[in-house]
Image (cartoon, rainbow, N blue to C red; front, top):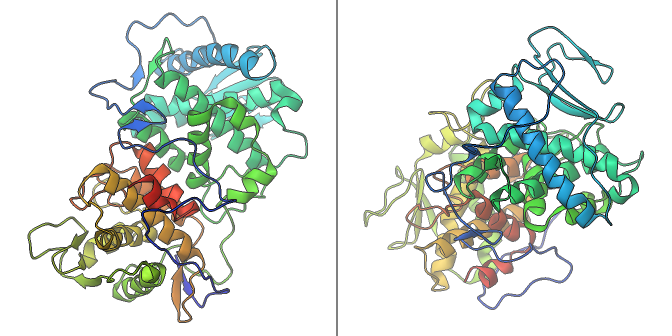
Length: 482
């Protein structure tokens, strides 16, 4: 977040009403967001459906140039064999009978090894996977990229990257039907490719893949976390050549494809992307490059922001106390808790400061002692604050619907925080802040999408969807999660 006088005033306030209805003109998520399902599929975890290659999968009848035929090459070729089958079905079904033709070349390389020349580019130090339309080829780095993805997020993360690259091949093969032209900006192409990858993963989740399977809880959580890993750096201009999008943007596109299929992806054009993309350059006054130190002064300013956002709800607004996150009645969550007995939000300032410290180069989010960024800390405070607003409306606080409602209301506050109406020196959102919320919601113990006891919704997919609904249209939070 950034701290300075607001450039413009916003009249937005949040009113919690159980009879709320959608605001005309605002986009609405497709279908219901249910704590027990993911886009209509039951929530499963890896003890029920083990995410990764299937045992006894059929032999892959594909080869790659320069391959060493090790585990990473076998994983890549298995993914491509499945992608060929998927697009062999979907392209004629969704695009007027057009046939999917396999790629002309598949190339494996080691970015640490002997350099190759592919698509007019040297592979020396090229930690990447890419599609090249010049010769209709896909290449991948088996030496660094795929092993790193496998280590951090599991084998299905490597499958995600290859599904994205085949998405670019689909754009090329569809031609005008894809809506892509020479003038189309990179960000639109990348959003479409992420969306096509989401459609492919729905096919896997539906049990149609011969070679892979994915759980809709833990498994998909890791896939969405992969989007955080491969996002653009915060502060990148979406209009820049090569822009792929922030995690917030990439997760949206993946979820759209997973929920609605390839036809939705092909409809993503410049107008649609411009209306929702979060990727932008840092403001010149943003000297902190998107992150401020989480301390008592910043927490005081977040309280001002929350009071402003929820003052029209009619609820008695809670007080904030830094007491180590302890409630008098014994109910508490770390590093922030809501105490209904005295209507307070209690927090542990030191632990919030640690959560609010962004990771250093080479550190992985989720490691012990590694934080996410300032907005993750502030959003956790906001999530507990919304408990007071819900309690005032006599809504239950201790179930999965409450957890989704909490994520939704936290997203609604985030929208207000983009353009705060207060006239004093306040905190405002910066590019990349929404990514920090996504990262927090994909953690095992997310508070943003948790009930009063700290129990989060099982599926990260549903957590992010609920937050996005609130961010898009606050009035739907109780209408959809009553």
